[in-house]
Image 1 (tube, rainbow, N blue to C red):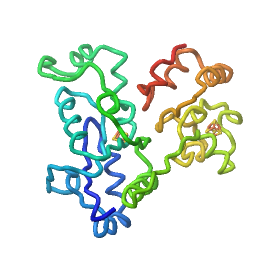
Image 2 (cartoon, rainbow, N blue to C red; image 1 turned 135 degrees about the vertical axis):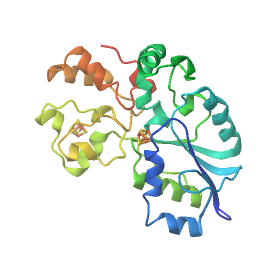
Image 3 (cartoon, protein in one colour; image 1 turned 90 degrees about the vertical axis):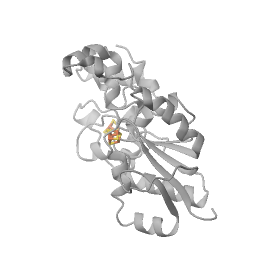
Length: 254
Ligand code: SF4
Ligand code: SF4
């Protein structure tokens, strides 16, 4: 594209770990900023506050408090392309575990003055409120995937985002399957690739921080989990972790 890509990195309810992935690109970021990126808004990195418009907004975090509802719409209006980054923004994140319980019960348990807490009943993904052009998954996102994505935006190319399962990455790496060999409840068969099968490569089960891809076979995996000895509530808990409020996982019942 002509000129530098005007970029905003925006945070809603999140731990900032996904923005941290961009800051962690210590070797690549200076080159990108010198030559291709005009960082207009990135509170974690610079005190400069550019009001937009932006070519690209990277949005981290879920919609969790009333102020978020207006702000996320403003970001959409100011940005040509909106990409959500991480499990919080794409699925509601770990804070969405409250969605199956009563917010009042939590507030009363944690806070001395729960009436002072202004929070939405549910923590929801950004895509439930505005049109999202691209989603980068993970908790946190993969640095390589983020850099590939930014470079694609800079050169005006359609980004390559994985649509396979983690199992495909596992097979490419020649890993021994921990679900079959060790009877660990691995979520890889229903989880979008992109992490490089990180957990199975170290002999542990995937917990689906990248969330589901489109055509998942939940029934088959539930059956397999029961075969290896999981009780119904344990099967349910497997689908209620970092990406439990994704559209596909939130409907899972046992
Ligand atoms: S997706 Fe994970 S790493 Fe990223 S902001 Fe949310 S909790 Fe933090
Ligand atoms: S270890 Fe998990 S991700 Fe890897 S092939 Fe087995 S089920 Fe799939």
